Length: 343
Picture 1 (cartoon, rainbow, N blue to C red):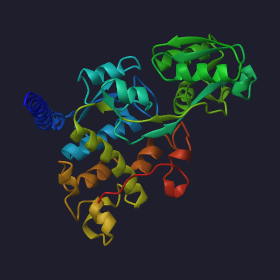
Picture 2: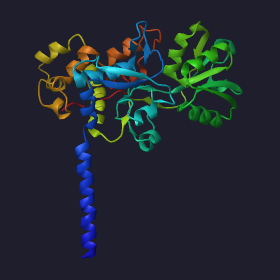
Picture 3: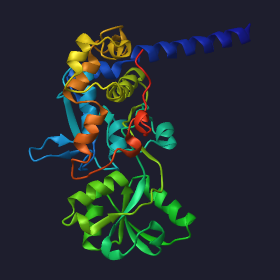
């Protein structure tokens, strides 16, 4: 009888915890809707990802992802405010509730996903990898020629460990110099304080575009790590996590379906394609299942664009970064960007 009572007590406690968790589910969405905007953490100034333009408006693929979330939640992509954060500040800001989502060229790793009270929803904004930016005067064509080099690295990033691993594996020596911001690192390269700047390759292209003489610098061919850059949310609210996840997938699914900012509203009214009808809310209750309006995807694409449009506007060949889609192309075009279906 004593054992039975103990078992019943455990079951009752577990049930209470479950009910508590259920009651708290959706608290983040409720709080966001009540305050009327999404607080988004972005970088402290990285061209192509998040950087203020001449009018002070934050531009970039990371910033546009938060606008897409705002379009889904409020039907208005302008319902977002930005917090510019350096690498050291970003996780604390999310853990403390200062921001609702971190969209800041952040690498998805097991330790960050499992031990920091954070969660990566599953959508990767940009598949990247660590590389090296060198002055042409250095005369090197490969990272394996960097034995004895002095290397500028941004503190608080996965780059520090990746570079250490690479040099150790290739029996090379180097001297690291760490900085709190990416701009400080780039300025030190330009001044000659270090031989090479290392970071995610997308960041190297971005920083090179800001130098006085970008053509004097070369991004070396090696990619020494996997860096899936992804949005992050605080752990504990599955509903909010699902919304962020499916906003990302909506951006990919609309590009794959040929749905753009120019044709999305017409397609929503006239499409005969069942997949497109479900995606755009003309059929089914897939938006309400996420606690979003039926036309949430239409609002996203009409105001922000699909993934391809966002990529080309911020990172593509028509921008100073001139980054090729490469592995960030859709799976149907030889890349690895792939999204589950809305159905």
